[in-house]
Every structure is written in structure tokens, then in C-alpha cells.
Image (tube, rainbow, N blue to C red):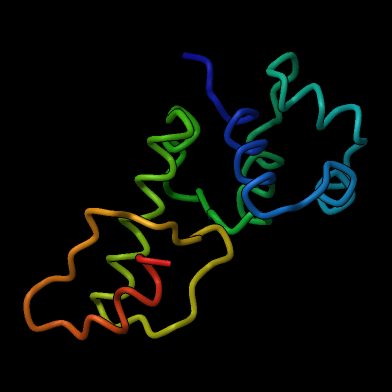
Length: 123
């Protein structure tokens, strides 16, 4: 089964506002190779793939299945992880990739401070 790793890397990179040059430099690969990875013509080896996701704030060391998601599924997973982190008392420090977006159906759970939850999920 082929992964969507390159597509997801491109999605996360753009979402974070990181240029191809910046990401390629952090991954110690050429910009050309990154372009080929994002276009799906080249696959990163598992260590480079893990590093790329970690640099983009989505560690996959125990969750390699993430590379088989599409971009919408990844966004949903990131929102789930962000909510889980907040509800379990993880404080206000979140990995960079866990970026909140406006959700019209965002409703906080009962007895949970709305201001805290919406600060992250209803931006």
C-alpha cells in the first residue's frame, strides 16, 4: 500500500507557512527531492519520513498508519488529538502541527470551561 506521506507533508508545510527551502534544509535533503516527495514521485525512507513529520509537529513514531490518511482525515485526527490533550489536562503547550480552525459545530463538553476549549478549537 502506497503512503500519502508526501501529500501530507506538503499539506502540513503549507498549513504552517514553511517554505520548501526551509523544510528541505531542516531535513537535510535537497529542495528538488522535497518537491519530488510532495508530488509523489519519490518516497522518503522511514527515518526521513518520521523526521519530516516530527519537524512539522506531528510525531508518528508509534503511529505510522497516519501516512495512509488523506489531508481531511489528518486534519480530523489532529483536532481529535488536540481535544484529547486539552481534556486530559495537558495544559496549553501543544505541538506546532496541532493548529485550531474555526468549527461552526464546536460545542464544549458539559462542565468544561468554554473559554479554555474555544481558545484552541474555535479560533
